[in-house]
Image 1 (cartoon, rainbow, N blue to C red):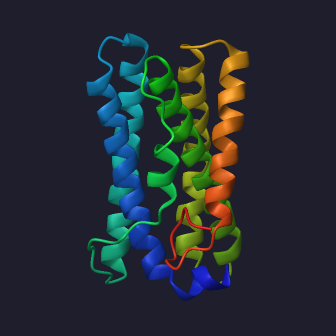
Image 2: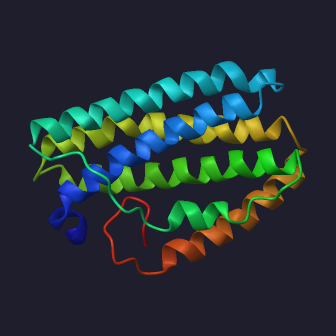
Length: 182
């Protein structure tokens, strides 16, 4: 938390990029899987919510005088996506499970920031506190959607595999301060 406090501008900037990527990933699902009707409405709702979060963070950046700019991401997302299987429906299952893991990690990090900033930056703590329920709901949605594609046993086994990969990724030190870095 000490490192995050020292780099709050960078954390906020990274957060904006993460929300934009989450919205983009949801929209990509809509276009990549139009034949899966069960995805369309819930994922469209999720994309709108992610864009709303993006706009909230942009507003906070503006109020704080932080210039929105390109930021080199942590390797977390790209490394996590490297293991996506190629054949369907396994590919879609992996995309949904990885999205669920990312949302769960966001929820964890937002909780840490909410608690760690409560006394020193109540505005930012309030923002992160307000986003916790959304992140948890997004996590659950991605898991529920994946469960429509394969049986629970296969889903749980694959989630365990991807969770181990994720644990390895976040265990590695990262030279950049990011929401999804070790």
